[in-house]
Amino acid sequence: MQLTILSGSANDALAARVAAALGVEPCARDLRRFADGELHVEIKQTVRGGDVFILQPTSIPADEHIMELLFLADACRRAGAARLTAVMPYFGYARQDRRADGREAIGAAVVAALVEAAGFSRVVTVDLHSPAIEGFFRIPVEHLSATRLLVEGVHPAADAVIVAPDLGAAKLAERYARHLNVSVVTMHKKRISGSEVELRSIVGNVKDRAPIIVDDMITTGATIEAAANGLLAAGCQRAISVIATHGVFAAPAPQRLEALPIQQLIVTDSVQPAVQPSRLQVVSVAPLIADAIGRLHRGDTLAPLLARA
Image 1 (spheres, rainbow, N blue to C red):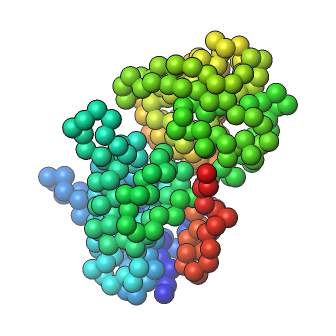
Image 2 (tube, rainbow, N blue to C red):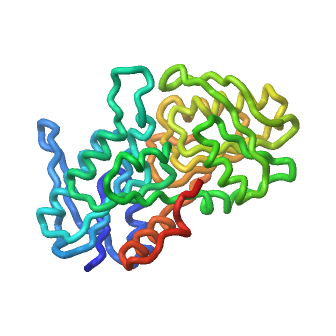
């Protein structure tokens, strides 16, 4: 089967880098909106009998990017593609993985059902907010880890400590700690709203330590702000480092991060935010995704690339 890389509009630059790493040209396509806002999708070259990988992080605006992904899949299926893989470096709606207060939709489950219904045979994603999301799919989910790429630019001080800003980031923090050979501190938080977080406690000693806060995503910056202020109140060094896979940076994240004593802020290029904070270091996940696509196309194991507990 011929390998084809097709991209939605969410991150054309990343798709181009992935295609270049694989030695192919991105598939030509046309995405446009009619006057009433309806989406129209057309594939501009043959994909018949091909192994098609559609790269589309479902970032802001998530709903539009999800619809593009589904329409691109339908166009490829109707054009005779033999196999479709959804490459979703950032999985939107991942935080809606359970009912917290009662009569709520489980957004992640709805998105998973839509992806399956569109005809995809598998999904490739990077550092899911909740590993439980894999269980919403009845097709294979290849859950990649960007940890190795992100730690390459980190040179921890002798007194450094990895900080999980909440319990959900604890396993991710353990992965970073193993790579950097430092200890882990875990924080407990309570989410007040979509953009407000309250710190409850810190498990571990951070006094006079150089904290490295790690998380899967930065959206409004509320979690990082609460964690940084809590660490400072507990007597940590003022030179704080922050590492996150997905830099979504929805308002007011840039302003919140600018106000904090962050020495190093590292994210990947999994999404293309409209506004970025200063002091930002971006690491490309293109080599990781290209490696995964190549292995899947050849039928090789992905074990070295997968996120493990």
